[in-house]
Figure 1 (cartoon, rainbow, N blue to C red):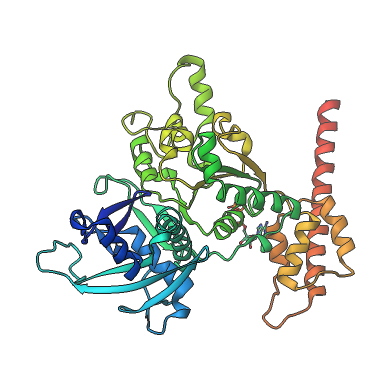
Figure 2: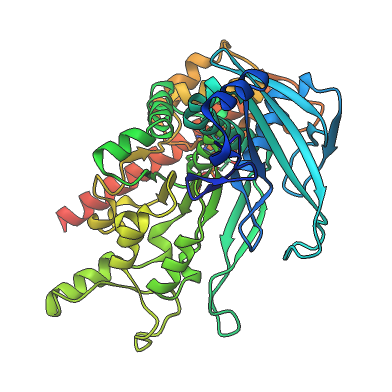
Length: 467
Ligand SMILES: Nc1ncnc2c1ncn2[C@@H]1O[C@H](COP(=O)(O)OP(=O)(O)OP(=O)(O)O)[C@@H](O)[C@H]1O
């Protein structure tokens, strides 16, 4: 009979290692029953590290975060730590402290343990001269519930708690060069304030995107069932200043994912791209901005079509010599990155392309299924303006709104330009009316300029036809 287990989470499945008390062969059923009456509990030990190489046990990390969030209020001995990657101090139960938890009506006990590392233990983490673990105790009758459901619950909840407590990161790939032939990353804390509420766009469109994201986030089982990699592709297109970058930040903040901003011009070959891709973790927004500027697909493809139809399209990097054939990043390499076998590694990822010129992109790159949703970021509409007025001026209604509505239907102005006008010009200025008048003036000037341009164009055409 086993009354104590050691448990590790390795790559998504639990490994149960039979631990110390192998009481059995000698125990008679009667004696066992008597022992159960005296002590009807089983225990699971979750060590901080697993295996001979002392790799971090993900289940320990999840349990630590879970206990910090869900149970620390019931503990009287706590400890607080501030990790490099944490936003605020993390309070967890202290060593040798016990807390209780209840799952589906069953009570369990968590005990935080610490013991000195023996001199024989090999560890690359020399700073850890103590080995920590949690001991989980529960009634024998709940053993199946704990093994089958509670531990998985701990892992999920713990991971979620850890993500929300950690500062999210913005990663960018560094250029590949002779001194650095493998991709490396630069990273900073991701602190972009854009959220869906502050995004100026049609509320209905916003809700469609948010619903799509929620379906994706909760869709692990669904994606598994239909045999598709758990990823979603969005193509954001629209003129400069319509909020494509703000939308990316809002998506990342909404999902609480890290952002990987891929600089394609810093990637030389398909191999580099694959290396980059395998290093991106789960729960990530992968962004390739201004894809039409970082690669030259359409023209090259058209040229090739004439003579070497079956040859692969080469993505020409700015500054890359035509003869430099050994350094190739190809369209098929990029497509593989989006939806080939490599795309299935790592789970839960969102891929976003942005472009100012939809027509410049190769249809293969943006066809549906590859990019699941095409999102147009448009010039400022009245609905979008109302969001900006609320954000910048704290006004929901104003007598000048009617004039602004009419002008917005007549001229193309980006949300970035509208935001610029609504921003108070001095620190003391707090007059919404003044800002709105400025905006009206800018739009009227624009309207006049556009009317002038149209008249000139008309005259030119007239001159050409009479000549
Ligand atoms: N739809 C929007 N909602 C809220 N703010 C916006 C929006 N569009 C633009 N802005 C404001 O304008 C600034 C520039 O916008 P942003 O960088 O998101 O546009 P973009 O479409 O990504 O531009 P580019 O194509 O030049 O990169 C933002 O910092 C934000 O203040």
